[in-house]
Amino acid sequence: MMHLSTIPNRASLPLMQRALSRLATALRKVADTLAAESAQSARIESKDRLGTSQAEGSVTDLTAILDTRLGHVAFVGAGPGDPDLLTLKARRALDEAEVVIHDRLISPAILALVNPSARLVDAGKEGFGPSMTQEDINALIVAHSRTGARVVRLKSGDATVFGRLDEEIDACDAADVSWHIVPGITAASAAVASIGQSLTKRGRNSSVRFLTGHDTKGFADHDWRALAQPGEVAAIYMGKKSARFIQGRLIMHGADPATPVTVVENASRHDQRVLSSTLATLPADLAGGGMTGPALTFYGLAPRAAAEAQNDIPQQELA
Ligand SMILES: C[S@@+](CC[C@H](N)C(=O)[O-])C[C@H]1O[C@@H](n2cnc3c(N)ncnc32)[C@H](O)[C@@H]1O
Image 1 (cartoon, rainbow, N blue to C red):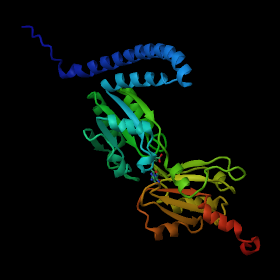
Image 2 (tube, protein in one colour):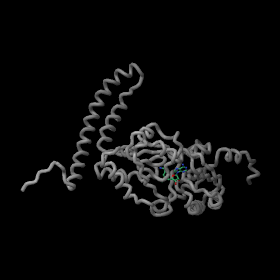
Image 3 (cartoon, rainbow, N blue to C red):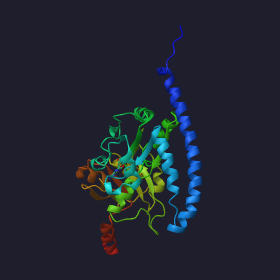
Image 4 (tube, rainbow, N blue to C red):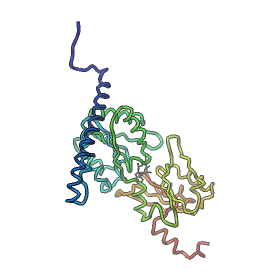
């Protein structure tokens, strides 16, 4: 006997999700075209009145509405911890989120800003040994977005810096889940501001490296010979545990042991601390400092006050 049912069986659900996702893409294209057309005419009007075009925002908004109704992931940079360093876009994403999947480093002050009706999911990972594998996190993001919820994947700092963002994007792409990125302030920017320095300076360093102290395989290798040249500057993420390794590599390649090294813990947060050290004494200073929070290590930079005092010392005293 033939059995008719309007309820899809479980096996056909992924197909339906794909079909819906394709429909969403098609609708998005239509929405983009319509919004672009109306933006074009609104631009002509509003430019006269306001001197600027506000209509461009409507394209993004309309697209986002269509995306979020059918399940969408916003990869949002939460900044270094101070809620005042959230972008307005990030703040809005937190207001509108239905599910927020966050990293361990997201500060309580920022989590407090999440829409109270949203579900908070802690996808915390510890350096050197994740408590949740990256594959689990990818699956979590895809599973939540497929419920149709507005998902925010909240990452510390800027999502594009040492955030394993591409793996999560690849998982979304493979599952036909749409996504966009909201940039944030990376830890290096907040930390360098706290010591009154610039990441680059004319006549000192015309480039700056962002390095990781360790990667998935252990201590990370870099072009130590190039970094050991005088005047070079690097912002080292996850550098505390690898301080001795980094020190050894740089000295082996000829770096001056007196090169300034500054460690900023909990940059931008109320418990921020700054450790002013040198390449020669870094591991010992770190061991004595008892730093347990996230820390950014600057190779080649001293806090401005210390650097100026050093410059004031007559050269014969340094000889
Ligand atoms: C997995 S990486 C993520 C970096 C992040 N995406 C960013 O742009 O800042 C984590 C590392 O960032 C650094 N970090 C993050 N927040 C920090 C903060 N508030 N102060 C100092 N360093 C921080 C630390 O080196 C920490 O171990």
